[in-house]
Length: 316
Length: 316
Image (cartoon, rainbow over all chains, first blue to last red; front, side, top):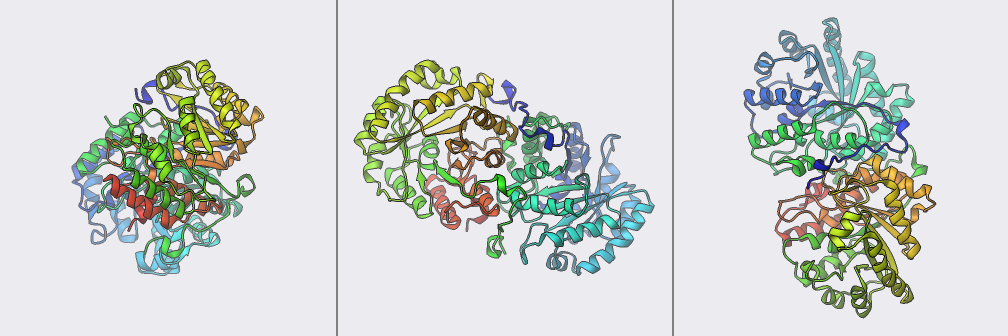
């Protein structure tokens, strides 16, 4: 008999329950961060069904796509078609990544009301990914955020390479805090602190979040975004919960791995996060069975198994 | 460039560093708990090379095999041959599982000095696994432990099903504490609290460990043994560290999964644990590169990839 048939995971209150948030917002990035890493583009009808199924499973934030130039991310070249075909639900938000003013124009034309900008915590990644310095990065963001706020959009700020950078190595905490604060001062309502290459460990997570909190940033303005490259994503998320963070980015089925390796690991799998939150008595609003069924369905579309442990364990 | 080439994971001290042990003993169970779950038996020469490579990587505890009846675990039927062929190193201990007095006779004959007994926290699992009640289980252990201590052996006590039982569901904390205390009173020097079906979550771990600590058991007498069935093993280990536990069972490459599913998850992978400990500045004595190379080598012998994220990421 499987564990779920007997009602596990059980809710067993932790010893230090007063330190933990009672409810977590899961920021589902599978359709964007997951699918942008697939080797070949997924048809727009499949993406639309995916988003619809994710909403059915109870997720309240579905990052839908990105208005990055199709030359760089051909997997998301169908952003306009996707948003035109999307049946928006009143209780779900559908944020879209916007890299620059051209992207913002496209988002405005598509009727998007929640956007995210994508910044780097390091000079080298800014140079490699954005072909600009950190100062140029901020100069580029400024008109995007100003115009977005004027249009009553909400703007989330991704900070990438918060823990390690493949060229620079470990990233100083104060540098991450400085970049994050500039994005908040610019008008972002929340930062998503990203471990873009998956090297973070729980002590490092505490140090970075502690740096922001010491600088006066409330944990409600912070989210975390972990990749499971070295198996640390869930342990890191636990650390973030203990620091008071209550928004966690994850991807259904752990989508987002390198498409060239079978079942390679990508983002933190939403299902693994849900299992942990269930056991800790933390509310999240997600129906795990529906979500697993969705990830199994998507894995069939992609032709490779989900790397999520929970999906592997519960898939019928 | 890979993360390790630039020296990651970095040691970044956690905010609450005073709560954490400075050094962790990794109790490597791959050769026993890992290989006993393989569909077909691994040749004894391969096991001997495996143990030798694990010792080379710096692990100081290598659970070698089990003296369970070969009818039940044919994969470990070569226990005598293995121990006869083993070159014991002075800085490594090689514990062996002993289920009963017959097993103890075999262990004594083989010159074993560290044994472990394997008990159940639930009546149903005692019945199914040992074909006995909990009281009969203890009556059976009594002469084993008495004779082992008389022979100057050390005796570790495994407590299985500490979190969930597939027949009984969630297991009451006080029941686990009661079973564990009986094993300590009998003469076990350490308990390994096992999540045999992998359903535990961090809050539950804190509750069980808190139960023992409240009952007066020092954390140095406790170890944890997690399976990664639902992806929780490393997060659970982090919780155990925060409770003051400094011995963690794990399996090189995550060996121990169901052999019928490709790359299915078994024990916590030693490599994933080492990565976390490295990042947290906690000593463990293991050379990660050597360990990864060993798991890659073993995966080739078994004909299927390691489920360890770190092995997948670092394997050349």
